[in-house]
Image 1 (cartoon, rainbow, N blue to C red):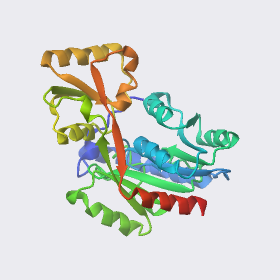
Image 2 (tube, rainbow, N blue to C red):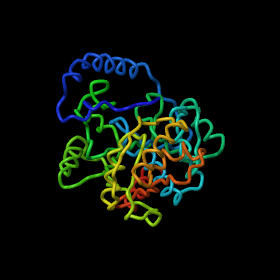
Image 3 (cartoon, one colour):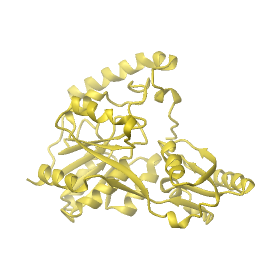
Image 4 (cartoon, one colour):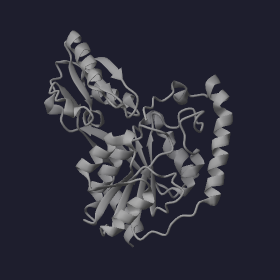
Length: 314
């Protein structure tokens, strides 16, 4: 699914369009409530962790899942990541398969069955917090402090899958892009759930040495939060002269990339994209396009490991 987030979702106050859509939000909320009443969670034979969000798109679920997989390898080798199969999200699945032991399926219960059959001990789900049929052992919510809650409304009037009070039922938070202007967010989270564990994250560029910062750069991406991609490059002193934004999970055709190459050539600019975008264009054999290789750093990583160890294994 090609999805371009509506601008009004991230306005500080609900807009006229948001107000028009509010009745649909109420209908969806009621429908979810009724589904929750009917749903029965299956008893599982494997330990499960879910990395999800309540703000749609760009919160860093997949990088966090990969990082957590790397951390938890210290506890067990019988570990896999899990993702419900979506043809439109093939980019994330390719990266997860490359960097972890990935299990996919048409639904999450099927994935659990596959993991049990292959004698896995622990599953880390990328997405699925709102799945009413899975009883996760630990549930983490990813947030981008800069986007935070957008206009604060539920879809389609806003970007939220659930309201903030849903944090009462979750175990931990991964919070990126926190600064002095957004530090109040931590206090707000703790006021809702004093027991929730908060872990601060940020991205570090691993392949800086591949780029000449004296060059001019054109960047393009089809991700949930392209602003973060641009800001990370700007903060590392890249001279960005052109940005092209595609919808999230955009499926590139060769003509799309040829158009990008033409624009870059006219501007005498080098091209950078994200790893998530690059995996979808690498078969075009275009050596002039490079991707940014990122590492997610988690502050107090040892505390995270100990917390999961205690909750899962003790």
